[in-house]
Length: 209
Length: 209
Image (cartoon, rainbow over all chains, first blue to last red; front, side, top):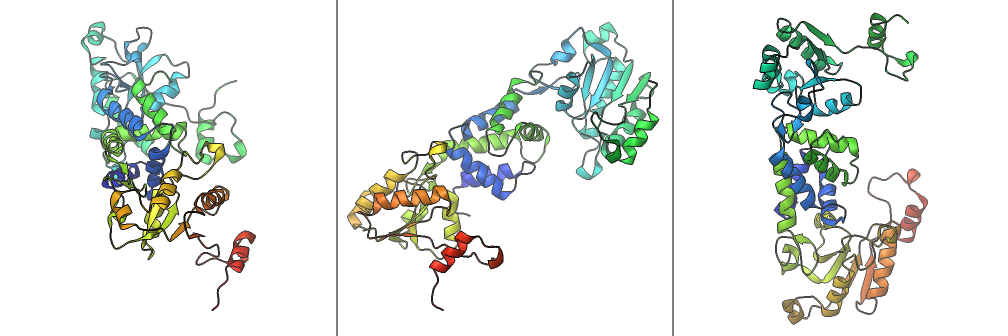
């Protein structure tokens, strides 16, 4: 392979670090970029450098933003007494499509010792500080926004459940109410094929008609 | 989606231009880069910008290189009278693993009108010039290297066959011998499952034992 110029080998190597991209895919991507008229190594490269240069995390909720605080935290019409805790920034976008009117906290991961993700790798301390102070900024403290409820919306899998338990222990003396998203059948599901944990969740969480 | 900063949207958009990368994969790649400790938007971005900045095509064979002429064209031990014509730079690497001792010419694509690929989009003119002059550089002309054989090694598919026919017409008055790679059974193949075109090729090209 040393016949290829080092620049190409380096680009192939960097692409291979992406999830789901092996040696052959990485080669294909690099040579595609060299040849295509849609996009180019330059536009993708510049877009990635801009990510690094201009992106910040909101000082309050840790959402990706270009400013000190994100649009949601800055919006006075949002209910700042209710915090929805999610794993990833994209999950904020998903909840924004619902009618949710509270604010968020992005953990940037879940507890997963096998992947080296402990509480220090997550934005847990920021969440605890926020629940203590009712907000990390002077204005929020001045308004004395008490946190009424923290909704833990980590994924319903092993890591997500472990993270939820961990957060409950951390927050139970600070926040009046800590809740977890309901388990149950998704819309359009077929009960015949639902797994037993989901069915048990749906039974336990049943509501009066 | 406008909740996400424009830098993230732009990176997602650029990733989506890659083959096999859709909206969801592009989102996943961008957020992976923002979070991972292996690689970063910066290292991948810089690697791509270097591609653009430092990569050239060999003036003779059009292989990717960092210099005026590639290592193979510069190697005096190679047989410059035999040119193997390939579609892509990676195919040069594949042939270098065989005992091939001639030189190459990279077309950078195949004829494919549906994708807007005509002879002008390929390095066809460079190949014709090379066969006329026996090389595009002064040294090569001085050595008066006559091209003895052009081996057309485009893929054995519709576009590759069309490109091979086109090249034969272009080169037949310039080069004594124009050949095409043999069709036949690949190593380890199962005759039972071979398609009829491959089997016919293997029969037509049969050799005495």
